[in-house]
Image (cartoon, rainbow, N blue to C red; front, side, top):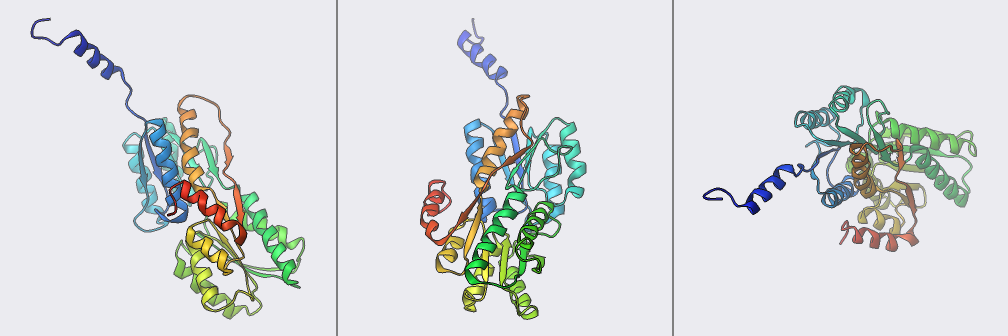
Length: 316
């Protein structure tokens, strides 16, 4: 072939030209690291590696900053991503960019919080009704053990604007009222800040001396709540239910600062969201709702659950 390329070189060049570029996936969430989204990132990266995707995990520099979340979504759309996986706390703020993403042919999967079928192809996360029922069952079980005549409960979630967490809260209240019709409920937020969660508990105990139950719906706030309870020796006064399953939270369950914690499988959310998106790209039909499940972890369950975290590279 003279000074030109050989047949072998031509074949390699042709094969390279025909080879499709890897799928470009953005995972945009509300906070990075920690028990919840740190696990989701590991699950996402594992799936991207298995699928041969080019994946980017993105979070705002300030936890739960919704405008930064929207800016990251805009970047993904501008960069012509193939897949967007996102946690959306404010559906109204995100509706425009998610609508444009879908119009552009981007597969959109939401994790942990729902935005509806008009804005996403599917959702994977903790079923809000199931979580609310799990929280109520634990509260009622522990209240029966203590022989409580009534319940005054403080519920501390991530953001009061979270429709998914509000649904969990409403379900929990409804279930508890079936047994304690005069139960009182206080709903508040901690913005994924342990100190804020701790301060809220202190404030509510001062304002409501009859407060006897604390339920956390934020994996970053749970250690703050547990640390306050332990520091003030309130284990016998309060029923305390945590959420998520970091080694730190498991330690608080074992010590008795938390009666139990209810784990959400964030690794599964990050991992299986990718495989749902792959099916969307392939033109396959998928269910919109995909429950990643809940696990109630009592003191006697902590050691076994810690081994699961180690297997996933989420604990030493």
